[in-house]
Image 1 (cartoon, rainbow, N blue to C red):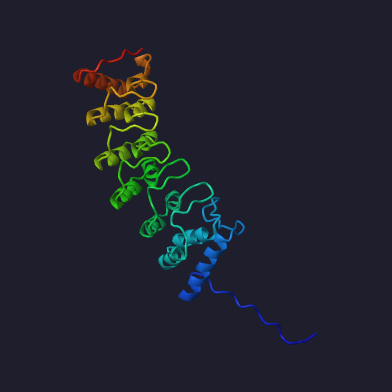
Image 2 (image 1 turned 90 degrees about the vertical axis):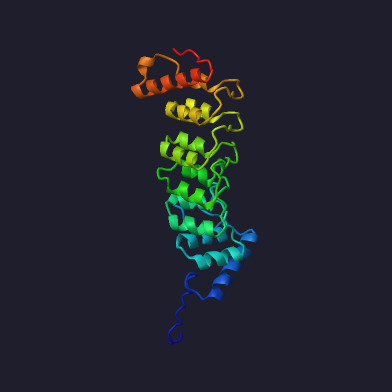
Length: 262
């Protein structure tokens, strides 16, 4: 056996620090591997949510690192800024759920489509409408998203999700951005119906005053009043009783019969 020292392996340069030519070659090889039907090897960059396509996984890592140049090279080589993880969540929504504003802004700059729905049809604006901070919502509206962007499955607008999340602040942001109140989802459920279903009497009054149609019916033929509280008013808190009184007064003033409760 020779006593000559064994040659030590040379570590490959990391993709983030490699020369541009090397980065492009690596990016291209990732795209070729993905189109050849390679085995699942996506990086778990999302705490349990994986990107099966290796190019998508590399792009996710690049935007997470804030590497604009590498991200653009990967996209030029074929990576998709609208790629979905194994839960059907687009990259942009993945960044939002991580709370990573840098990755979020970079993906928008790279052409990610905020109107792309996840597996449930929610777009980035629907997700933002359910958030505790209005910053995501305002950023997407400033980016040019319509406040009436429909859920790609149900047709519901972001106002429905803001109501579901009990976010009066986000409801206000959307209304100030011009969100319509005379809308219905694909089941014919209007915002008034939805507000009544979730027992948000304040939102019911707000939508009525903003021009929502109190006579609109859903596919069962019910108006929003059919979903308002029915029962002993003594069981309601003072604020809800006050809202119901204002709703009844508004209906009477506008020639709409008030359905009996109790």
